Image (cartoon, rainbow, N blue to C red; front, side, top):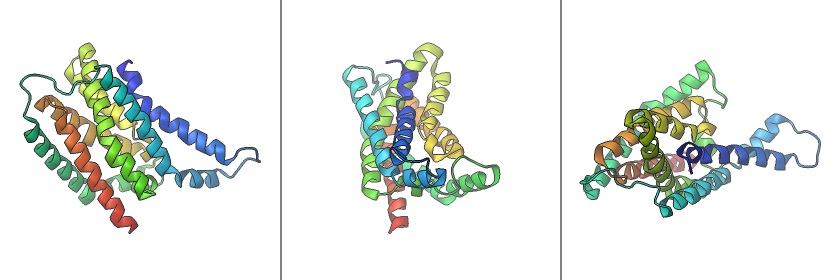
Length: 230
């Protein structure tokens, strides 16, 4: 599977599921109020997110079984315990930056410059119910997304265009995976998560580092969502 097509599995799955759930809501009846449809679909974001991650996990497993995933970039790479510790610390630092300032900045950008989602609704939209959010965001997403975007897409693009163009393009594609969160959320994900995780992979030579960072970040994000809902 070509890397660009692989990177679009998640965004396309999200789009198909959103359209499918919307069509299910209005099936067989008169046209519904768009706001009513949007509110109903928003209530199903937990299951939609989980189904998207199942699609990504299936793709990641297929890539891994076919030998198309690079878990190391060079020999010798960093020892994995060192990589895991640095990854966890980086993920925690990134979450702290998000909770202490980046989230408010995103809300301000959405409110002042506009977006195609309502400002300040990202976490609330995707984290209900919490059980599905945990399965999707903490169990499946870190492994599936790292295997695909850092382990497969980044090295394959680098074979064609070199590491730096591949790093930027893979970060943009990773941001596109999060398009349901809005324009500014998508841009922030590419710049503040996709780009540094790719750099960490290049620097360490071992996929365990960005995977640990991603898992740490998502677990803390789940903790934030849990606190807000309870």
